[in-house]
Image (cartoon, rainbow, N blue to C red; front, side, top):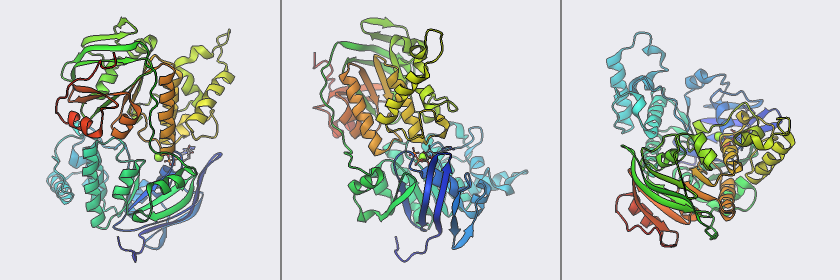
Length: 507
Ligand SMILES: Nc1ncnc2c1ncn2[C@@H]1O[C@H](COP(=O)(O)OP(=O)(O)OP(=O)(O)O)[C@@H](O)[C@H]1O
Ligand SMILES: [Mg+2]
């Protein structure tokens, strides 16, 4: 990074209000070519809103943007494209029925209506080659991994000569290996002089990739640092405005009787012979690399994708779980990792969403919903998980991504299940709230809930769990006690060295 560089894009005094929410308040920012700038802040700080203004999805209430020193107005995404401003989001927006090359060139006017196929494939190959990526350009997008879909989106931006590339939480659903590959790609783009704005919640990644770090809080610009001149602790303080401890250490709860027992659970071609038990008060972590099929086990226990063999025994009673409804009735709740399938009813309020699965509890004698009770329950969660919203009556559609996720979590916590399965519970959640989630899970365990936490964040699994079950390609590699589980041991098991199963030590 060169310090005498001129910014390619400058934002000055950008403001944006949504009703009662001042999403952005007088934000100024300089974006430099050949540099990665991270934009960080708590859920609802205004990061995505700023990006949507830069890409023409929203119009600012005030302020100006300049590109190469000239004032620009970006009224829609076509205009953003024309200026060379491109954004890729956490969930790529590729068309599954089109192939890789078609996806890359979909927004090029000169390729329609008569597509010059040969030329298109050659150019697609050239772009991927430039990025040092090996992907078959004739392959349909349908079968691509999320990481590969992101690569297609980046290639698309490059094909449009993007000079400013914005990435909104691109690593949220990637494995460590994929993150590494994405960062190599980002590095190449930086070397080519592209200005990159990177949004992320994992600070290790931010410090690894960014040259410059900008912190937003409550819609305001708090600080911009060169990343080698600032510490993690300092940016956390700036993001949160108070002291937070990034790492949490579990209290050892008293375990009760066995809540859930799983024996020989198998699903043809997906996973085989899964065998474990979780006691009341226990947190059992599920670790493994992406593709280890941890989520599939969760989906089977919740009846979304039922298993075809094996036994599921809840409090001594064998269950036949064929649907989520049956699972919920039996007392098993599952929070999905997939943000697109959060199962929230977007036009409805926070309060309604939280109480939806347990609506019966809020009905009065006439069968009408007791709004006051519903509200006070929602209020409790809003405070506890610091859900940022004007009130619990706010429609979920108006919340930032991370805050929607917190509503989802509140919904399942409030359902009061016997066994709670949390799949990537803190992905996309800011540092401050993450600590709250860990604390809350700890308290729920103390109250006697049996909890399964699936997480790709190894330090998180290790700090939250009493025991950790490690999976690899649908097989169970071992179960480790927290005292024995180190990152190395878990990784070794996840990568294929079978370990002695230590399950049952506590009996
Ligand atoms: N369309 C909208 N209508 C009403 N309020 C909105 C709308 N979009 C965003 N907001 C509000 O603006 C604020 C900033 O939201 P934004 O999505 O920019 O946050 P963010 O920093 O991207 O958070 P996250 O890390 O959770 O993605 C939030 O309080 C959000 O509820
Ligand atoms: Mg966002």
